[in-house]
Amino acid sequence: MRNIAETFNVYGARMRQVFLVSLLGSLILLPPTSQAGVMRWADRATQNLTNIYDNGTPDLFVTGYTWHDPATYTAAKRAQLNSHAWGLGWGKHIIDANGNDEMVYAMMFSDSHRNAEPVVGYAKQWLWDPVGALHFGAGYTAGITSRADIFKNIPFPIALPLVSVGYGRFTLYGTFLPKVTSTLNNGNVAFFFARYAFR
Image 1: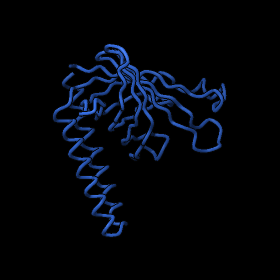
Image 2: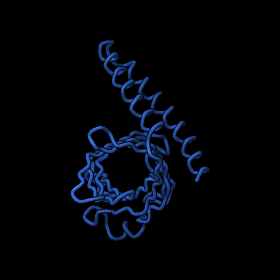
Image 3: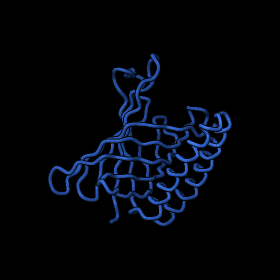
Image 4: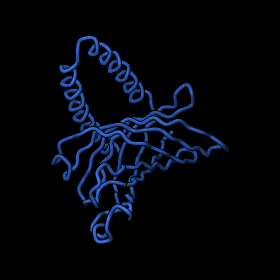
């Protein structure tokens, strides 16, 4: 387990560098007053991410299933695509003062074309605990990923909705990648993964 965590720490550091270079590059294009606001926001975000990483509960992630919308993909195309998105991840989460969940994570899994897809990200969920240890969540995730079929593995940002249902230390998550063009065999994909919190 230690080797997995070390691997994701190294990859996470590389992706953070790409994110920071991209952020700083975009700052050059902004007027000075906007730059100051972005820098204040970036400072608060960095402090929050550091707090989660330093003080959060360690988590193991297991990825497992990708659903391709039959109304968007032909049967022949779905037969070619990989729905078994097996992979692993490591992260940390923290429950904030309002009882909501914030986490940082790094995962590597098999994408729809059976290529390895890494993702490093942050997620926030507003939680509801209706009965005992049962909990439901809704929120978002934002991060950086890379894919062989998109930009030829050049890292790019993502922002997606995130819902969950869990019991105790175990949580099942789902996210949805919507269709953004009118082309066939593209978009409307749901991705599911699980988290086990070690304490």
